[in-house]
Image (tube, rainbow, N blue to C red; front, side, top):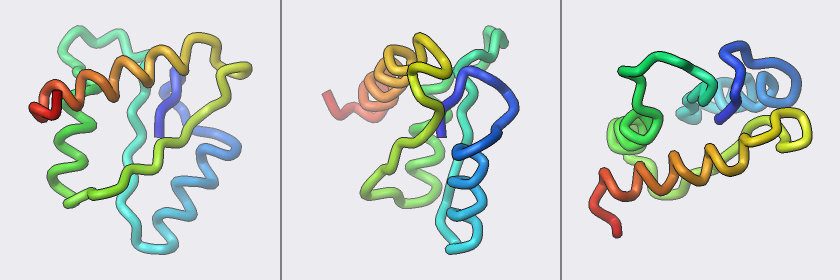
Length: 87
């Protein structure tokens, strides 16, 4: 789950609730975090590894609701793949 905001609302919140209800692992990675020590790509790689993820469903806010989100998510996915040595 990717958003630019720290707080999850609307459809994103429902996605987290649905995953929880069905016992599926889920992580929210807020991309608007200004913490210099927060590495979203490393966080995603850790989540995937800890949960044995083979297929990843990427969800989050719409680009129209959070402009710039698409490009930010692409960068995180690329970073996670580089960290994992998949390139």
